[in-house]
Length: 449
Image (tube, rainbow, N blue to C red; front, side, top):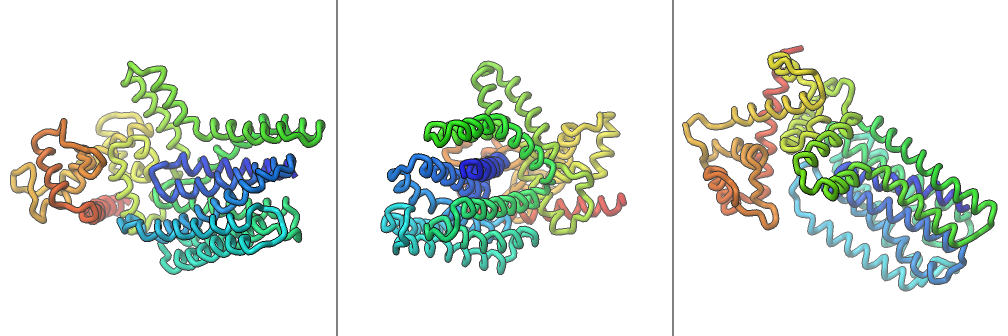
């Protein structure tokens, strides 16, 4: 039983951290990571509870078992949002908060995870499973995700409703190990669906990057967890050894998956007086991490809408060289021509730099030919929406942002954005401008073929 729990824990913990490491700024990845890691904690706590026969852990676990379901409900709501949408999340947040209140109220009524079946258990199942099924139907109807992801969502949510019932309601009809394994399979399936959706959204390949992370995690899990499992098998049930097993797995997997962020933290501590060295090391790590995300033939089979989406993502990552390294647009024939003209080597960083220069040229091409540096008329919208936020780095909507350090023209643009342009309007202008640039790049690509 402990061995199975350790396997499910390691899988869920790894996948949760993997999604978080992809981009901690994306709500859907953060929520999915919360669902996976909280489920991993439930698995670990349940295993320790069974070993120690602790009533206190049983009362704690009844609250923790609701967290994965609440998080996955939030994930399904997020997946139902149209891409690049600035629709307010206030409604979704209210729904998630309502589900959480009802679920925790049910946990209070139930008292603990032990039998017999009580009303509180039924309330928890209803609070988590019914909204998740509703969100699944809504996500499928909206079809805001690629087909394979929708299929994963449907299958995983159906399993999830059953898994919650088995995990939360201790009927005694299904062995605890089978309940954990079935629910762990479902959670992993949903996690993979989120990863596929994010990779599709960014124009990335996923298989090689995920495989590398999985192989590394398997190695450290076997090295650190295997020894403790042997100790448990030889020495019998021991609470201290069980706790040590799960904490060792958690730390080892976290160090492996979060190696790059941890390296950045160490650089800030060790090279606090060498900002250039820290920046160069971060660029090299980012490039190394981005390489497995590149497809062998990234531009093959891209339809018009996908090409627009990929272009929009590249513009959004204009200031992040490591993100541009993984962009499919680095395979554009124009990049080859620009490298040849400069006599530069065909290397990922060089391609990313040329892509940034190419995007800067296309953004400059949107500037009206009236001789001015800044304007607020309609013909300036496309240029202003891309040039000042991305090329110049004007962060008009960031918390506590000011115009300090900006040149006079950028300062003028900052005041205009803050005073007259709603954030949603800027976002719509950026999407429209990205479509113009994507149409130009795609026409050149078709002509080159």
